[in-house]
Every structure is written in C-alpha cells, then in structure tokens.
Image 1: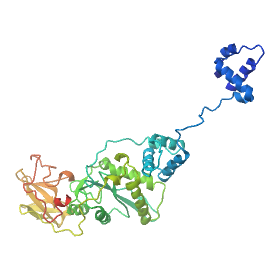
Image 2: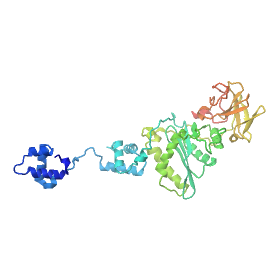
Image 3: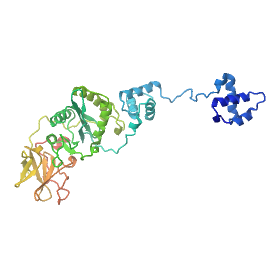
Image 4: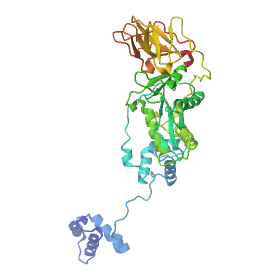
Amino acid sequence: MPWKECSAVSCREEFVGLARAEWANVSELCRRFGVSRKTGYKWLGRYASTGVSGLSDRSRRPRGSPGRTSEAMEGRVLAVRTEHPAWGGRKIRRVLLNVGHQGVPSASTITAILHRHGLIDEAESSKHKAWMRFEHEHPNDLWQMDFKGHFAMDLGRCHPLTVLDDHSRYCVGLEACGNEREGTVRERLTGVFRRYGLPRRMLMDNGSPWGSDPAHPWTPLTVWLLRLDVGISHGRPYHPQTQGKDERFHRTLKAEVLRGRSFENLPACQSAFNDWRETYNVRRPHEALELNTPITRYAISPRSFPEALPPIEYGPGDTVRRVYDGGQITLKHREYRVGKAFRGYPVALRPTVCDGVLNVYFCTQRIGWINERTGTWGRATRGDETREGGLEDSPPGCPASVRSAHSGPAAGCVSRESRR
C-alpha cells in the first residue's frame, strides 16, 4: 500500500500507528506500505518530535539560493520595463550593463522575471519573427522616408513624417506634421538636412508628395531633391517590405509612444517625438545592431546642405532642352513627355552607344531615355542605378549597356565630388 494510493498524511498516520504497536515489525510494514526503511523511520521520528503535523510534506526549497536574482536587481529590471513597456529581456539587460550595474542576470532570466510578473503577452510575442536583413555599407548611403499613418489629436490630426538611415537605423527625422503636402515635407527636410547633411540617396513609396503616376514618378519634391544631388528611389508598388526598416520603425513608434496616449496638438506630439527619438537613437539597444544603439553606428554626412543652389548648367557636348509647362520637350519636331514636375527646367540629352538612343539627365541624375527612331520615351526607375552612365531601362532592341558618350556631371548642380 504505497503512499500514492491514499492521501499522504492519512497513509503516514496509519503507518505510524501500526509501527508503534508493541509487536510491530517495522521492516515488514515498510514493505507492505511500499516505502524504504529509511523513509519509514523518518516518519516515526517526525511523529515523535512534532506529532501529526510532522507527517505533512515539507518544502523542498533550499535554505539558500546563491544563484537567485536579488530583489534589488529584480526591481531595476521591472523599473526599466515600466519605463519602456515594449522592451524585452535582451534590451533591458544591455541597458543595465550600459549604465554600469554589476551582476546583471542573463537575458533569459530577465525574460523569466517579466513572465513571473505577468508583463509579457504570449500572443504578442508569437508575432515577432526573425527576417533576413540587408543594410547599406555606410551611413547616409540611403535614407528611408515615409509617413506613419495619421491619428487624431484633441485639435486636428497628426501625420508623423519619419526619416531613417538605412545603415545605422538612426532616426534623423521624426516630425509631427499637420498634413502630407510638398511644402510641409520640404520645410521639415530642410531642417534635417541642415543638421545631418545630405544623403546619397533616399527611398520612398509611390504616394504623394514624392510619387506620381507610374510613368512619370517625379514630383516637385523629388525634383528639389535631385537639385540637391540626392538620388531618388521608389519602392515596388504594394510591397511595403521594400522600406522594411522604416515600417519596423513605425511599429516601434506605435508601441512605445502612441499606443494608449492622447495628445492635445502638434506641439505636444512633437515634444513627445523629440524625447523618444533621443531614447531610440542613444539609449535603446537595437536587435539588428547586435544590441548596440543607432548612434554608435551613425555619422553625419560630409555633404552640407547648400542654402542657395547654383544655376543648372550642362556640358558642351550635351543637347539641352527646356521642359514646357505641359511637361514636354521637343526634339526634331517630336514631343516627348518628361513630366510636369520638371517644367521650366533644362534637361540634357546625351548620346549612347546605341544609334538613335539618347539618355535624358536632370542635373546629375538620369531620368529616362529617348529613342529617336521610334519616337518613344522611357523612364529610369531605380535611383541607385540611374546616376551617371546608368544601365536601367534600356529601350527595346538596344544593348543592355546603354551608356552616355558624354557622362560628365552637370556643371551648375551639386556635383558628385561634393559627396566624397
């Protein structure tokens, strides 16, 4: 009759009662009850010293736990979590180490502490998956720009404009805007450029104010960026993962700043954005950066923002045409629609190795090509492959290596030398 066939205390009490009888055979009782002699005599000893209460199970918890996280350290973990409710074990551990705490537990132990205090939502945790990452080699090689979905304030709506460096994940711009118009974006970007300099290229989606129709994606805003010698790339339509870093930044912004909060007006939003942007750039460990902070991998661009742009001038071998108000240029009695965003500006036509095919440049950026034989126009699409001598979008029947015979930079624009 082993202990498990009856309640533990009642079985032990029966065993002790029988074992204390005058003619009891303790060894035989132990065999009958299915326990060892050592266990049987243990229960007899406990009953003799404390009575029936001594037959209850005692805690197996050790008197001391030298490996247990101290209450003080656990309090520090919970304090960081309270201040940053979206941070997990790895980030919290790195922050505690960064500020000089000794004896910081492992990330898994910190995660266990958060679980023990009910601070981790299992359903939310299951949504987070690791992705293949790609990043540009140097800071300011590429900036990603987008609007986070707008939200209501007590007075009006806020449209957060976000600008993120691809290499370092450093947030160079987090602006609380009242609309998504070209003038607003240009004003906010001017402030960002004055502080951090000019990137080599910027990536954005196809929406307003930096996108237009697929055939003519240029807008007044992107033309202004081209004047600054900032290359332009548009993401693949309906594929937000092209701007995956900025999309991930938006999710973090929502979790750590916007969720559960309300704001009175745009200045209140901007104040909250400024405080959090410092936390994000300087103190918040980033998973994609091996838990380093973005500021450890970022450096301002050596290309300063020019307060006044020089006139646009092209080389002596270029054929120059001014864009009409309707967005067209004429060449040999034919019209080609370059895009209304370029109206009033001169563009340069440069011959390629393919007879009758000309590349079209605005400042140092190749924006498309013209096939004189067929009277067709084609646009260049990817900013990283459409600068001087680019290869993108060769016309049908022409070799892939359509390069300009005259590929010098536009004299009056911000030249490539200023990027070095």
